[in-house]
Image (cartoon, rainbow, N blue to C red; front, side, top):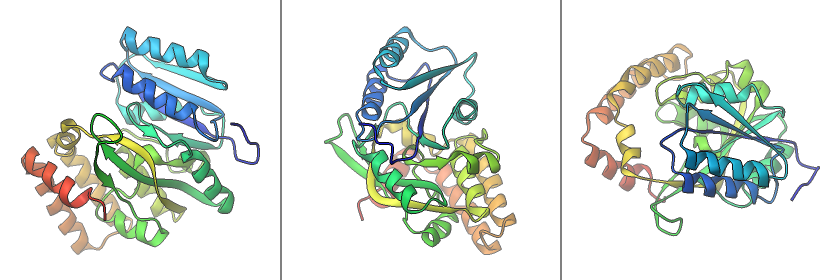
Length: 279
């Protein structure tokens, strides 16, 4: 439904050739069946995609009641570059992120927009994630993030303080801090660090906003050796901006190194049993 008492907002997504067409279809359905419908959907094709994915996109372009913009990138550049490109085509002041294989709860945007109305100065509103395997009823974990501003600042010292696919971001703030920047698999963590270092108001809702598909690849990606230089650069940024002490900087570097060198099976156990459990 449409309700003009809420701010206009856009949904920003990226899709690439290895994405599952069925998952993309369900992700877009979850956006289009919200209690508050976005003003527009901005979908970036990150390089050439399959015919099956193209059919799903064409279907939703026809069915979506508002504007559905498809931005085509000539070659695959990664998520950070895709979101940077897509941001240029956003016409509203609020950007809701959504991944191509996740499912938003039906009233996700309504909850977030109510928070924005209550606190117009807020720059980022995120929320909690429930992880599932194969179908949403098969819950295997939770990605809990802190809700208050001070808790978020403290959490940032050690881990990413927002669940990226759940956030709504103020576009003006996003642009002021430099927007999305390619940064390994850490483009979101780096973005939140820049926003938080500038003292913008941020928060997370204590509600599950997105159901996320969890697979073996998710845990493997967290241990990619190619990410380690970006982790170290990010840790150095936090220290330079006085967001961590020198002792915290060193401890964080050690923890990052241990996470990278852990066997994938052990990393999966740690995330499921300790980091992504329901508290």
